Figure (cartoon, rainbow, N blue to C red):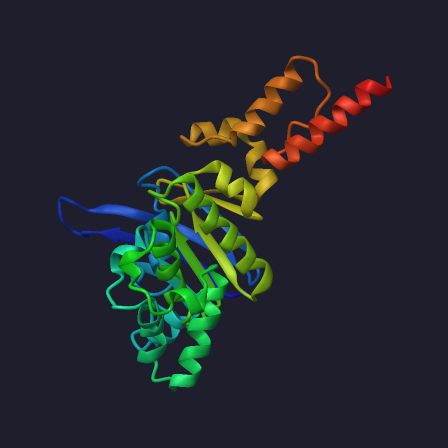
Length: 287
């Protein structure tokens, strides 16, 4: 267990006419090695929740304990918490500011007081992790790169801090299909090759279905659902009540089954559906 959330409540603008309860008695455990999808409609509390996980926001009440550190404590070492939990906001490329890719990714490790050789090792490893060619791009200006590459530079800057947990808030927002695929494929590779826990905040059911192994659904500041990816997407009616849905391919397979075709309608990705349909056609051919 890397993060434990106990009875977490958060109120914006307390004791004013603008008071809003953004989180309402949230209890969660995040285990090491999980790839979690955090979903919910706008205003459900997703962004407020993830900002608690690296101490950017402190609870109104309740606790967030990160690798043994209680972030709500007056003497909490929030710098250490932020080294353990890296948070990448939407459009992180807007935060790029250094003159070269190398310097931008090196900024965090440099401020930790690391030696130059260690910084170089971290920058090179981070660039490789996000699919950026170190030799070709390290001396380039980040502002000359494509949108997807800029985003990967920004993610690389967080990875260079060697976090145990990586949180990404809508990491593919605003990107074209190629850029989205580059980011998501890179995250999948990072998850498989590195000892890291990933929390992906997304509005895309297709992205979530393709990559994560656990889904947490937020609704009106509460945890409405929490389970494996397939378990959550089985609950189509409940998701629709929460203003969400299921992957389009799952909808198709369910409609196809209703029309009398004996297929598995719990598939959640195009790859799974392709295999299932091929097997179904083979079964029919052998009848």
